[in-house]
Image (cartoon, rainbow, N blue to C red; front, side, top):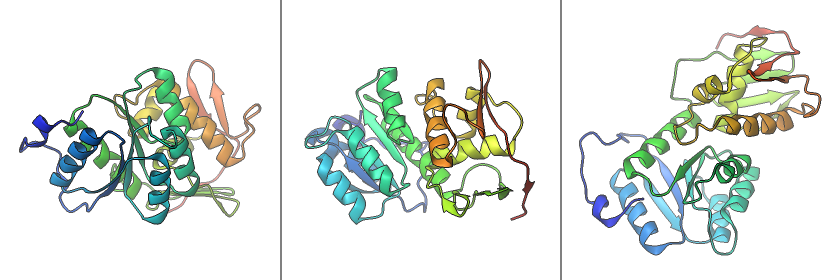
Length: 254
């Protein structure tokens, strides 16, 4: 966890923000932790707004545009998971949960609520900044090799804007969901393991729980309108992973 002793450290090998111009909403009810975290992020070049309650977090996220939300779970007024789900209904902004709840079920609940990443307290402040950079770069489409626009029947995936359209309807995917769907669609007809999907989505070591892929695939099916009991698009291959099937199409040039 970020502390007073660490916030004054300066290291040349710390993650570089450069001209990323990142703005963060920090949601943390503990006074010392919140102040230390905000100071550290500001020193690293991340403009940080800090609120202390669940209702304030939802209100601030609706009022302003942020590049990332750093969300504690044990909040007064409204639980962090509820805040995460409420924000996700209105926005695709990357959400990183910062919580002392380390059990696998707690992390899976975070992903199910719409989080893009989950960091367990106590954590290294340098790791936190690296995670922030990773999710923001993915959200902005500035990471990994250049990818082509994919058009298959009524489904269109645009990597530059992380936009997924089906039958004229924006699916409003998170960056994590988009990357998972793109990996599956780009290799349609082939089985992709959970580990491969986590890598394709840029999952961190702490977030690399194989069952979290199941949560995201479930959310993808729901957004795609795919029947969870008898899916026709995203098939589960027992013991192996997932496969995108049921459509044929071409890869369009950018």
